Length: 100
Image 1 (tube, rainbow, N blue to C red):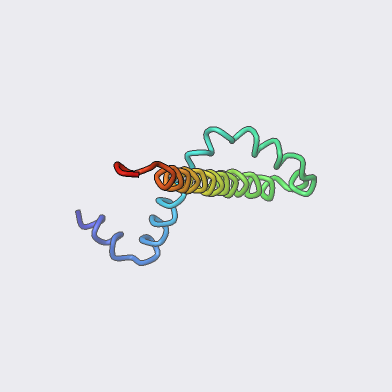
Image 2: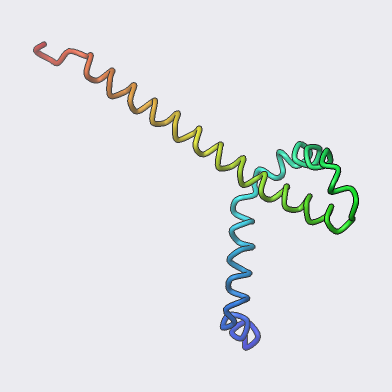
């Protein structure tokens, strides 16, 4: 218990845990697009020169790529729901009322 309280009181650990939590929440798409992102990252020749640069580059592409894909997915989903709401609103205007 005291170790947990000690770690909780350290600001750096709180930020680190928050960053890891953010990555965990937003990288569901990494499981679906992992191979695609890896193949695109392997095309960059400057990553092949240094093993550490390659590891960091691939890791960054995997995380940033999946977050970007989630962002695009949410934008498209919101756009479609807005279009559907607008269509429903237009349809409600066209329907005549009880007396009309």
